[in-house]
Length: 569
Image (tube, rainbow, N blue to C red; front, side, top):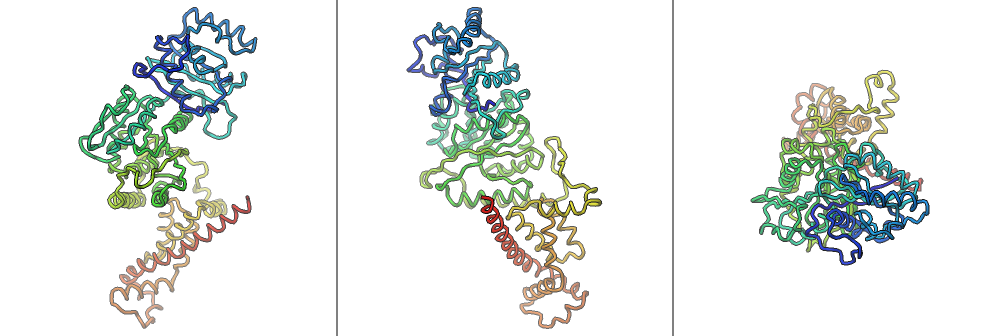
């Protein structure tokens, strides 16, 4: 099974220097040969030398202009004699007269060599053939060069046994997606040039958005290539505004995806191939997030911020993610206009709001691992204001939580698919044991169990006569929490203990003294006469008791999970 290992893109080679070790017979004046060479160079120069076995690497060119009669005869001779002799090297002793042969010679690729005269639209039919050829010929890799409209896209596939879901399994639907990179920048003049120099040879188009930098970004500091576009904001408008500006530009230009990465140097341009692979393997709209692999050098504040953000996004969307703060993402541009209209935020909080909006609209949110590099704090260029930006994020999460509680359906962005495991009315009526078993075992992470406990006790302490079960069921359903745990915790709030305690606390807060005569507690109507005190007391006693017991549940659940993990090795 072939797996996409890396990609490159070359359109204009006039600005690229000639290789110092170019083959003696290399036709440096053939534009297609130049583009093919530089596309291959961009791939192999950034991969470890032992990444693929070049002796067993095939070279394939897919181009609408194809080969002339001489080249066709050359390939017929190779197919008839070279493979039968098993040499795989016959073309090395022939004067190269076509671009793939020159590339193969330049990089020592000694596998089969083919040039297909076909448009890019034929790619879905070529890919299964490449996969079959790699198996039959026992190839280690395949270098596919796709030429169209003066551009050459390089795709390096490695032949691997299927290990996970990242392989290209749906060949028939696979096409070359139009993907561009977006780098929002604000006063990152020191780190930006290195990032763009490492990125633009890998990516069809790089869009840099100068978000009001002072001084403005110097265009001459960026590669002189049509593959690099610089957009400017006259003043600083925020990261979200910069992303939306780039999205609008790319959408007008016909691009389908935008891969965003930060300009502070923490992301590796080499991870671009992982996003390209993910988009190509699952072409339907989705938000891809690069989950950063945090090492020991990552600040503790960043770890806490990520965990804090993950928790709130889980409540707002019902989706458990590992890195909701990562700026390394792939956005589907078919929703660019919806994002601009629906998202009110324009700074760092835009990335959270856009994630929640897309997820609630039915757009899948998927993660893939990416590397991360953190400079020491004294060298990092970060414009995240710990007070203002955290205040914006807190305000955003508060708004999203209250919106989540409202009984309104979020705008659907993709066609809704019914969950085959969802509980139905028939299940509740005729299979109650199945429902109970499902509720008990659903959402069983320690944090979710703890928050379900918190909701059950906090809502159970409120003086909402006869409506506790309905309210708890509704709130836990909206937050997709464990209803069975929440309803069980609510049982701890039954009269008389907690209501009496709430009234006592409320009386103390309002009157400055305790109620010493508890005779009233035996008369139900007395609670109604002290309803205001009950409410005030419940807002104090409820959270204290809820937090205490939820922490206890979290500790017990974590201990059980750790013990179970150890027992299973």
